[in-house]
Amino acid sequence: MKIKNIGYKDAMVKQIRDGLINTSTILSITLGPRGKNVVLWDKTSKPQVINDGTAIVNKLNHINFLEHTGQNIIKDVIYNINDSVGDGTSTTGLLSGCALSYGLNLITAGYSPNLVCSGIVKGSNLLLNNLFKISWSVNKNRDILNIATNSAGGDILLGKLIVNAYKRVGTGGLISIEASDRKKTSLIIYGGLQIDRGYVTHKFITNFKDSTCEFTDCSILVTDLPISSIKEAAAIMQLSIENNKPLLIISDTIEKKPLTAFIANNHEKRINICAIKIPSFGVYRKSILQDISIATGAEFISKDSTNSLKNIKIESLGTLKRCIIDETSSTLIAKNKYKGQIKSRIKFLENQLSNNNSTYETSNISERIAKLSGGIAVINVGASTELELIDKKLRLEDAKNATFSALTQGVVVGSSVSLIHLSNFIDGFTNLSHQMDEVLGLKLLKKVLMTPNRSIINNANEDGILLGNKIIDFPFEIGYDAEYKCLANLINEGIIDPSLLVYSSMVSICKVSNVLLNAQAAVTQKKSARYIKIPIKLTKPNYINDFLTM
Image (cartoon, rainbow, N blue to C red; front, side):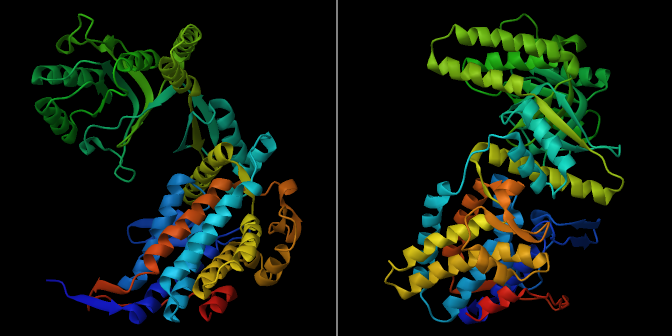
C-alpha cells in the first residue's frame, strides 16, 4: 500500500505556488520576437531547441507532487488553448500561472477565496463584453499575411505558404503539414475530403504518438454492405495481399468475427488494413459514399447492385495518395488524376442545388460541395537538420491555427497590448464594488493582464514596468515593437493577434481560479527515498518578485 501525505492550506500553498511560478517564468522568456529558445532533452529523445509553449510544458515534470500540481494546471490550460486556438499558448500559460500565484498570496494573507474569485470572474466578464470594441474582422490579404508571419516566428516565407494554402482551399478546406526529405519547403494542393468518422477500433493505429492510422499510396473499398462473414473478410484480405498496398475499408458494419480476423492479420503484419463506418445518416449516406467513390476512383458496391463482397475484384478498389484516420475523423487525400472527376461531380451537385427548394436538402448538398471543392493543401516541410525541421513544423502549425482563428473570429492589436488596454475598463468597475476582497480580485486581474507585454519588453532588454505604464495611457493601437525596440502604431506595422486568443485566455483564468483558489487540502503520494531532488535555480523577472510580496 502506498503511503500518502495530507497537507493543509498554508503547508501546500507555497509548493503549488512554486510550481506555478517556475512554469510561468520559463514560458515568459519565450514571448515576443526577441524571446529566447528553450533546450528540451530527456533520455528517450534527441535534444530540441524550441520556443513553443505546448512542447515546453510537455517536458515539465517536477518530482515534488504539489509543485507538479501547479505545473499540471498550467499544462491543462495550454492544451485547451492549443486545441481551440492553436497559438498563444505561452501567453495564456503565463496569464493563468500569474493569476493563480497572485491569488494564492491573497488567500494566504487571509482574504476570502470566494470573493477574490468573484472579482476575477466579474472582471473577466466585463472584459469579454468589451472585447468587440477593440477587435475587427480581417479582410485584407496584408493583414492575413501579418498574422501568419507573426505566428510563424517572423518568417515571412512560412507566412506566405500558409496564406497561399488558405487562398487555395479556404477555411473549409484542410491544411496538412508533413516532413519532407528535401531542404526546400513547398505547397501542393490535392483533391480529397474530410469525413466525420474515425477507425472502428484503436487496434488499427499505426502512429502511436498521435493515435492515428496513416497510410501512403493505399487502396480504398467503398460499400454500404455489412461485412458479416469470415468468407467476405477472407476475400477482402486476399485482395489486399494481391494488390500489395494498404487497404482502407468504408462499410456499414463489421461483425465480430470478420473484425477479429482483420485485427489478427493486421497485428501479424500480413496485411495493412483499417476500417471506418459510413459517415452521415439516413438517405444521405449513399450520396456521400458516391462522392467518396468518385473522388478516389473506386467502384461503389451498394445494396442495389448485384456485386457481392465475396466476389470482389481489384478493379473495384480506388486509390488514395494518403489517408489519416483518428478516433473521430478521417482525411482522404486523393491523387491528382481524379481532379477532373471531382470537378464534374461538383458541377452536378451545383445543378441539383439550383433546382432544389428544400432547406434541409439544400444545406446537405451545400455541405457536400464544400467538402469536395475545398481540397487539401499539403505543406512539405524541408530543412537541413532534424532540429530545424521540428522547429519549422511547430511554427507552421501555430501559423496555420492562428490564421484560421483570425479569419473566422477577427483580430486585435498584437504584442499583448490589447490586454493592457482592456485592463482600463476595470478601473471604472472597481469603484462600484463595496467588497474589499472582490476589489482585490479585480486589481489582481488588471496586474495579470500587464504581465505578457512586460515579458515581451523584458526579453528585448528594456524596462517592462516603465514602458508598460506608459503604453496604458496611449491610444489602443500604440504599443511596443520589440523587433525594432520602439513605440509604434502596431496596426500599421502588421502586429496583430486573433481575438479568439484573448477570449479563450479570459475564460481559462476564470475556470482555473475558481478551482484552485478554493482548495483547502491536498492528498499526495509520499516521496520515495530513491528519488534525489536536484535543485535548479531559475532567475525570476522583477515583476514576479514584486507581486509575490503583495
